[in-house]
Amino acid sequence: MKTTFWTELFDLIAPRPCVICGGRLTAGEQVICGPCHMHLPLTRYEQSAYDNPMARLFWGQFPVERAAALFFYEPQSPTSRLVYDMKYHGRPEVAVAMGQIMARQMGSSDFFSHIDAIIPIPLTWRRQWQRGYNQSAELAQGLSSMCGLPVWTKVVTRTRFSQSQTHQHAWERQQNVSDAFRLRDAGRIAHKHVLLVDDIVTTGATITACARTLAEAPGVHISVLSLGLTKS
Image (cartoon, rainbow, N blue to C red; front, side):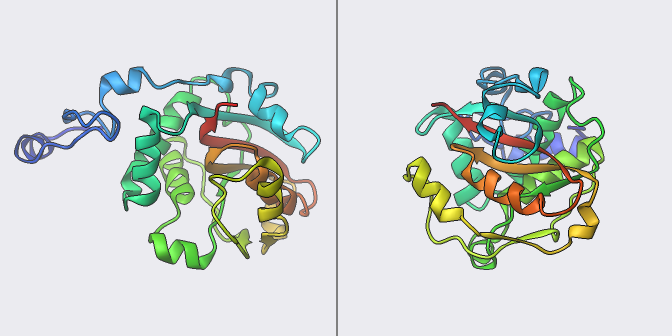
């Protein structure tokens, strides 16, 4: 992040806290401090994006090209504070900054090669109205600002989301998102390679349901990227 006299002055007057440890951020740091950044439990799956434990979640479910997550996620862990701030505490800027961090990490490989556009997992209109934003769309905007890929938010919509999936088992998650998405613009993604972006992947049920809907378009190729992957 580029710093100026004014950002340095503002940080002096009103220090920004790290969303993980609460420590003071320097002018050049975004949402997480240097030490917390260094201790993120990175998956490094972008180095083997075609065959890794996350990609295997989707084998046989839809024609996945490549898959990766930035870090391993555990509830009640330090990184969970980051996710809670992003999703439940009205901090869309955290998602944008983490999208930029994801892009820098993935940029060390050819993960974005031949991808045409980013599609964030949509929320229902009611959930987005309650939250004020879609954290996956904010992650996608952060990614886009670094890698230059367009974000397409109107290709697929979410028609229902009956309940939170946080405490559900794999079968319950699959039932909860069954027929939850509708393809609005098949022509736009036909024969394109799209990157499906979500915040946290646990069983992969939401990604799978959305990807199957996208796969209704002819010749579409689908890759997957998330901020976190829940450790099994």
